[in-house]
Length: 148
Image (cartoon, rainbow, N blue to C red):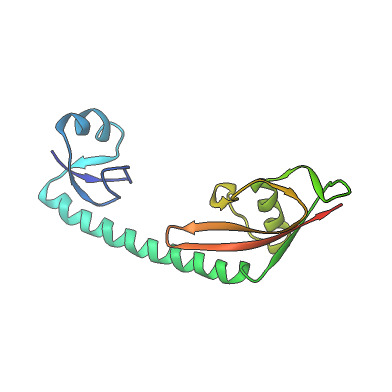
């Protein structure tokens, strides 16, 4: 069955794409959940408009992410944590701690899921945390963990 996707569906396509899917998949999953509509000639023309809107929104989101990246890359965020004499932390610094520091020091609100911490931060020092705001925009944020 040929359908026009109304939302992103993993393994099938993105909003506005025309997709050829199995009849049962369309009838039992895509159509009842509102993720797709059965393709008609008029709807195919409307799908082109959906794809154009998606690409404009994608370009706008990418530009916003790049602008934020240029602001955050030169910054060094300071996070205070309880530590022992040798600089070993009591616990660890988490993505939630980094998000809180970004809100307080840079006035930027991010979701903790966009941060990639390679390994748990369990000692004082300087670390790099990767941020992925857009599939094409990844940048590092420098974090300095200090003992309090």
